[in-house]
Length: 228
Image 1 (tube, one colour):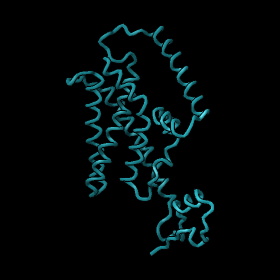
Image 2: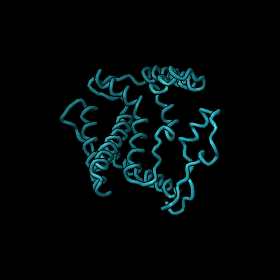
Image 3: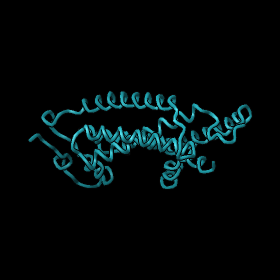
Image 4: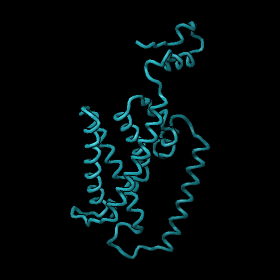
């Protein structure tokens, strides 16, 4: 039971970041034109990951707004935990979860994480076709679901539940609908190579801003990439 509690703490802290990070990685495998700057597109998720935020504040200084939000969230969760304990005590000591709906949600989301991890790895190391990556996603979903159920049920011999399996499948379908629609729209906004006239080099801009005393001409300031 204590091991399960440790799993829940890790899931609560890192599951959002894992979902977004693997979603971003999967998009890089399946689409062309995805930005390579993960941090640039991940600030809201990183700010919602307490260990990352705490470490960054040690190096960059205390951010009052973020600290206030996390402090309020901690107080709210502590109060809710006392309320839940008062009105819903777990009388079934052999049950790992007091709320079945919470288990179903965690099982489904964690299965999505495993699916994305397997599919991304297969797509990176066997970049033959999209079909191979899709096969990796399917196998990853099946394996992840079984492993998650083993951990949550604390047994290798799991009790299979059609309700849980169907709910997980629905979550996976909804995820892929949002994934395909969202990333397709993103990629369609990226112009083709023939349509690009010039590109500003982000590295040069950063160098100029960090060293304002540098005497660099406008010609050298811009890095131009032309088609062909």
